[in-house]
Structures are given as structure tokens and as C-alpha cells.
Amino acid sequence: MARQVLLFIDGAWAPALGGDFVDVVNPATEETIAHVASATIGDLDRATEAAQRGFAIWRHMAPAERSCIMRRAAEILRSRIDEIARLLTVENGKPLSQARLELASSADMIEWFAEEGRRAYGRLVPARAPGTLQMSLREPIGPVAAFTPWNFPVSQVAKKLAAALAAGCSIIVKGPEETPASPAELIRAFEEAGIPPGVINLVYGVPANISGHLVPHRVIRKVSFTGSTAVGKQIAALAGAHMKRSTMELGGHAPALVFADADLDAAAKHLAASKFRNAGQVCIAPTRLLVQSDVHDAFVDRFLEETDKIIVGDGMDAEVTMGPLVHERRLAAVEAMIQDATAKGADAATGGRRIGNKGYFLEPTVLVGAPKAAEAMNREVFGPVALINRFSGIDAAIEEANRLPYGLAAYAFTRSTATAQAMADSIEAGVLGINHMAVALAETPFGGIKESGHGSEGGAEGLEAYLATKFVTQQAG
Ligand code: NAD
Image 1 (cartoon, rainbow, N blue to C red):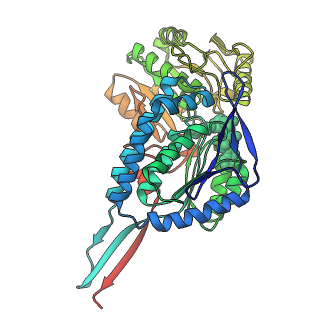
Image 2 (tube, helix red, strand yellow):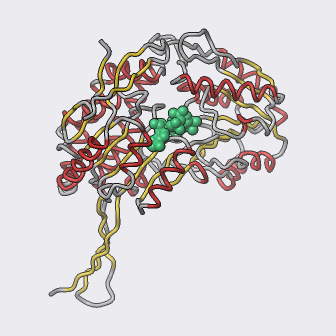
Image 3 (cartoon, rainbow, N blue to C red):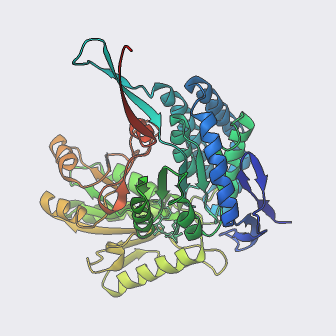
């Protein structure tokens, strides 16, 4: 019998009040493998009431005690990596090795914030009048509504959950309906670690109904969303209308600039691995590869060699390095962008077609010389498609890198310190990797600018997102 994934509200797992479930499909086989409960407004109201009670308990628990529960949850998660990775792979499609890495990095995130939460210090401000104590206090902002996508079903939840809990907030997570089982197991780890009822609540359902109810809700004080720019704008507008603080992690269209003095082998290796990870369904995946003319052809050859090594198939097979796209609509959207680019003059140096007719598999695709008018050069592709174009001088490369309204990740490969510095000075992005790709770690700030969103997750900045400042001034009575 197909598995059922339930809602977690007020410390208990239960079906939705209306009894509705939504099918969960394995993208490699197109088989229905599970059913996920779809919350009603009544369930959401139970969740907000629970989050309010949970907040009253959690905010007053000593940071050291909260830290202890979080570290225990991370330990439980680590001990189950193999088991949960399988659930993640059959729902999302990514290779098992990538699912394991995602779980390990989620445990890492929880551990890091468990420590950082102990250091949410305020400060004393020297007073003008004698006998006066001026205190700037840091307080948890309150119950959070968090919306997370299917591309990293566990780590996208872990990022928001870990920072919110570390700050002393309670949270309602709307998890991804396409991939619900693995985030539910993350929450189960916290349940077993002893998190008090109501501090974490997990719901699934019709996304617009859930955000439409939770974002304006009087109990909710903070909104955090990861997903597309189009949906992010709607949720940010709703949050603004109700004066809720928000963090928006939205889409990207990362440029990667490869200069003539770069280590071409390393650049091709890093960029191909990063491009095709999770079948390209990653907001920081390099998409526009801009290569200096003198080395353009040599780089294309090396990048194609790396692309040729990719083994596409069911992520449960040990040798597979790239799985299917997550659902049919992504396959149709990416295929349409490839067709549009080739019709407008791009050369499909490799790939471009669906593989087989069962499962949402697409060939790793390299498009060379796509014109700026191609849709893929302007809209987030979110699939296994690399666009390689040439540039001559650094100014033209910077202009192209900054041309789009996105500003999430960017990359550059060069051996010149001056060029590296010019990149740091002029590229419009929230994160920039120079000669490597490690731009998202627990201890470093991660987030976009322009239409890629606002706010940071990760690092001290990630904790800050869930804290409010209260100034208290006191004289002896
Ligand atoms: P989509 O825009 O329909 O959904 C994206 C995510 O937002 C999903 O998790 C969905 O459940 C959620 N969502 C949609 N409408 C919502 C609403 N009104 N309220 C709350 N949540 C809502 O797109 P899709 O086809 O699922 O994914 C494709 C696009 O999503 C990509 O092009 C990419 O831009 C974006 N995306 C970005 C990330 C990221 O990490 N930034 C992750 C997944 C998807």
C-alpha cells in the first residue's frame, strides 16, 4: 500500500480534518508512491493556535536547553541518513549520493544554529545620565510561517527551522507536496529529540490557500519563502500589506565568467558538476557560462567532455549521477526553452531531448551561442541546460552578467587577483564564488538581491532574520 504522509500539528501526526490526500509520484517511474494530507483552514487554525502556545514555551526555555534539543535532533537525523535518503530520492529523483549529502548538510545546519542561538546577545549602551541602564535586547520575533520547495526537500526546511528555533521562535512549515516524506522525517527527528508540542508544525495542501491564510494571520510575525520570483512577489506583497517581516529566497540565473587566464580544466569540472547537480533544479546553478574568446572553443570541448561523463537514470541506481526532473510540467517547460533557443540560432552541442517516455528524464544539454532574445537567456531555466557564450573584454562580460533582473549567485574563474577583485566590486549578486562553487554553507550568509529576493539564510545574518530589537532604559526606582 502507498505510504501516507500526515500533518504534524501540536505535537501529533494526523490526517487533515477534511480527510483529503494528494498523490505523490516517483518522477523516475511515474508511479504513485504515496499520498500526502491536504490541510483545510481548520487545520491551519489549529496550527496557528499550537504555534502560539509553542512560542510561549520555547521563547522562555534557556538557550542552552534549546540548543541541546536541536543537537539531539541533528544526531537522530544523522543516524537515519540512509533510510531518509531513499525516501528523498524516490520522491525527488536526485541520486542517492546527493540525497545523503543533503541530509548531512541539514544536520550540519541544525548543529551550527544550535550553537549560534546561544550567542544571540544584546548590548549595553553607555547612558547620558548617571544611574541609567540602557539595554538593547534581542528577542525572538514570534511564530513563523515558512514555505519550502521540492528541489531540496529537507535542507530548505532545515535552514529555516534551525534559524527560527535557535532564535526562540515557533514555526509552521508548509512543506513541498511533491516531496513530502523526507521533510516529515526531519520533523520526526525533532519530535523524538523532545521538542515541546506546538513549537514545530508541518502542513501540506494547496499552496495559495495556505499562504493566503497564514501570511495575514495575526499570530504569524515572520514569513520566509523559497521558490520562484513570481510567487515570491505575491507573498512579499501580502506580507507587506500586513506589515510582516519577510525573507525571500527566489529564483536566479547565475552567470559564470571564465577568463582566458583561468584553469580551464578546473573551471569545466566545477561548472559541469554544479550545473547538472539535481538535474539543474538549483537556484544557484551556473546557467550563463560566459567565456573569454581566446579560450572559448577549448572550454566548450572540456565542458562537453565533463557533460559526456554524466549517467542519467533512476537515482536509486548507484552509478547514476543525474536523475529525472521533478515533475512533468518542469520537463515541458525546459524542453520548450531548448526548442526556442535552437529556433533562434543556438547550437545544441549536446543533448536537448527527452530520454525515453517513462519518467521525466532529459538529456544534459549544452547550448552554444544562444542569442539574448532566447527565452532561456532571460528566464530561470531550472533544468539541466548550460548556455555557453563568448565575450572579449571584461566590461562586456560584467554588463552581460548584470543584464538580468536576477541577482542570486555568480561565479568567476581567473588566476588574476585584479580580475577577482573587479568581480567582487562589480557583479550584482548576493553570493559570488571565485574559482570554486561553495557559496552556501551553514556559517556563511546566503541570499539574493534584485528580483532574487531579500534577507539571508545561514550565518549570523540567518539568525538575525528571526530576532527583533527591544530597547529598554532603566533608572533605579
Ligand atoms: P511554482 O512557482 O508553482 O512553485 C514553486 C514553489 O512555490 C513550490 O514549492 C510551490 O509549492 C510554492 N508555491 C507556489 N505557489 C505558492 C503560493 N501561492 N503560496 C505558497 N507557496 C507557493 O513552480 P514549480 O513549477 O513548482 O517550480 C518551478 C519554478 O520554481 C522554477 O522555475 C524556480 O524558479 C522556482 N523554484 C525555486 C527554488 C529555489 O530554490 N529558489 C526551488 C524550487 C522552485
